[in-house]
Amino acid sequence: MQQAAADACGFVVGMTRDEFEADKKTQQAVIMSLVILGEAATKVMGGYGDFAAANPNVPWRAMRGMRNRIAHGYFDINLDVV
Image 1: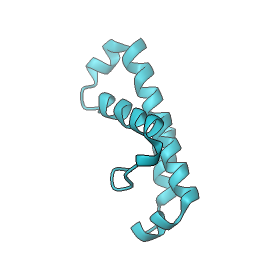
Image 2: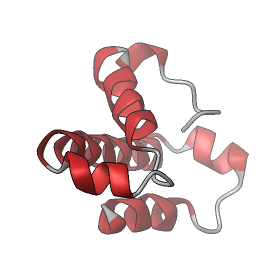
Image 3: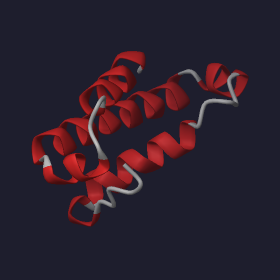
Image 4: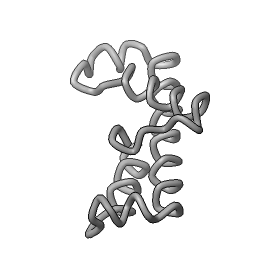
């Protein structure tokens, strides 16, 4: 999860908002990193519920929700949220 988050941040470092919006490859890379984070969050919640509960500061459900939104509503992705 840390690697996917670091990757997403690394992809946009030094970019302006306008540059990000114009760069489809970077958008795709960041979006894929968010999917990976959401998948991992889902697995933690499902297989390690005690760990997830012991770490309430981590937005497990929000990460899962973002993954689901991306995976099932791909053509309706809001770059403001990404």
